[in-house]
Amino acid sequence: MAVHGQKGQVEQILTRADIRTAYHEDPEGAEQRLFGRISCPDRRSFLKNAGLAALGAALGAAMPFHRNFPAGLMPIAFAQDTGAALMKEKDGLTVLADRPLNAETPAHLLDDDLTPYSRLFIRSNGLIPQTALDKNAEGWTLKIDGEVDNELSLSLDDLKNDFENVTLALVLECAGNGRAFFDPGASGNQWTVGAVGCPEWTGVRLRDVLEKAGIKPSAVYTGHYGNDVDISGDQDKVVISRGVPIEKAREPETLIVWAMNGEDLPALHGFPLRLVIPGYPGSASQKFLTRIWVRDQVHDGEKMGGHSYRLPAYPVAPGTEVPEEDMEILTVMPVKSIVTAPATGSNVPAGQATEVRGHAWAGSGDVKAMHVSLDFGQSWQEATLEPPRNKFAWQRWRANVTPPEKGYYEVWARATDMNDVMQPPVAPGWNPRGYGNNIIHRIALFAQ
Amino acid sequence: MTTRGKLARRAFPSRRFNASGAISHVSVAACLLVGDIGAPAAHATEPSIQLAQQGGAPGYDPMRRGIGRPTQRGEPAPPGNPELGDLPDAPGAEDTYYLCSACHSIALVTQQRLTDERWNYLWDWMVREQGMPDQDEETREAILNYLQTHFSSER
Image 1 (cartoon, each protein chain N blue to C red):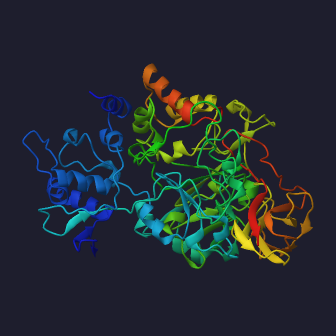
Image 2 (tube, chains in turn red, cyan):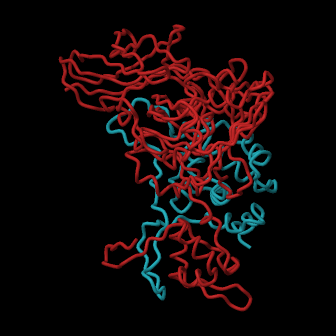
Image 3 (cartoon, rainbow over the protein chains, first blue to last red):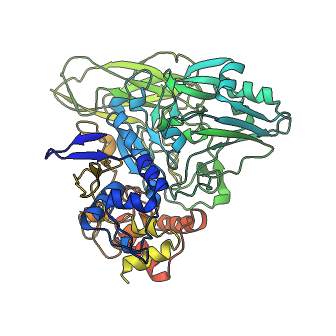
């Protein structure tokens, strides 16, 4: 694509795929054409200044040891995309890391009943597979094997045609959402409140597929695999492979999906196929899904062990080093809510009612009540709480608050689940990796 | 050989590019005109991403109190060096940058405030489970000291 730069220069925007093609066809010619590098007899050469700058620009980093880099060898960074170019399709997300790509949504941009693609958080463990970037689902198969009577290898058409199609609104939340509010800090991306969303997903029930395969009585757990690529570029390394107890896999809201909000899955969210396992950590909802291995034991895939997605078996003091053998798998996510309107820091009229609203959800699938406080938690008023459009969809809540006079106020919003468990005003249950923080969300209001 | 070179070599003997390529950030938004290219000049392959510690929410956010606190004791943190992914300039900063950014965003380092012990644990975890080649004692100490001085919840 040619674009005009500030000085009227015509610039060529090369995609990584273009660069890969050029290197594939003629490696040394590609270097010369793209970056002005001319090979010497010893197959080392210097990049001219402009070439070095161009290469640096294409890589996003300078290449100080370029003299040592063999001629005609494509820098591995071009071998796989982070998906960063797709950020232009997102609206106002906060990027926490670009390799792998992780971005969350500010709370006031999560006000939609159904979260649009542009406002759904991005949690990548690895790089985006080329099949997803190319939107190429040709020959895609999903293998179901392990503790089943009949191994299945299903094409996308098989899934669409041979099973009942289901469309459900389901909350997807990163297990580490809220990690930033632990003190001392817990390792990983410092998500605040916006690693959550509730799009509408279309697919088939995992249980229908498992039944067709005939699950054996020995089945206790699933193990999920996708074709994402490790950030090292090593194509053989499994980036993440998690699973769920077979009972969870058989719940009617646990889906294998190919569409989000009526469109093919976007590349960043798992094209062409992913799991959505609502109520569980988002990591269970494998993207770029290629295989479900039915296990006769708890799955031991990548990021199932150690401190990954696991909590201490007993409460620990903040900052405690917990032995790995004392860690247990995190399964059901806690009850939680966010305030999506007004945006934090908004001006509102003193002495008049202002509507505040947001969403509430719980890993167990039911929120019973929603309360808000305008006086730092000293008194609470009940908010209206709409029923979910289906189980595991988030629930809209609304309340009118009236600041009595000019000044600084905070709206505190607190959800209560069907077991009478409610969100705490301080970060609960410190754990080494910072999972499951359902601290009350607070926003600021300035009454004028 | 420079410290940077030694470290890059030690870290990734077989992935020379990965280690050395993670050096000093050049904005891909920069306009470049490469001569002799036949077709128009090469330009960036991916847009530069604005790495942000702060979200896009307008106004004051009470949830952000307590996140990324300045150091509570000792000297105030030196300002971040954009050449080193906004790591504060101090002994160990360069080694930290080149080792960590060979595998992941340096933002993953700068956004965290862990306990001293947890930084030690993470080092061993990266060696044990993430394929990070272990470094000599001097380098390990330099980098861990740097992380514990500037990105610890204990000071």
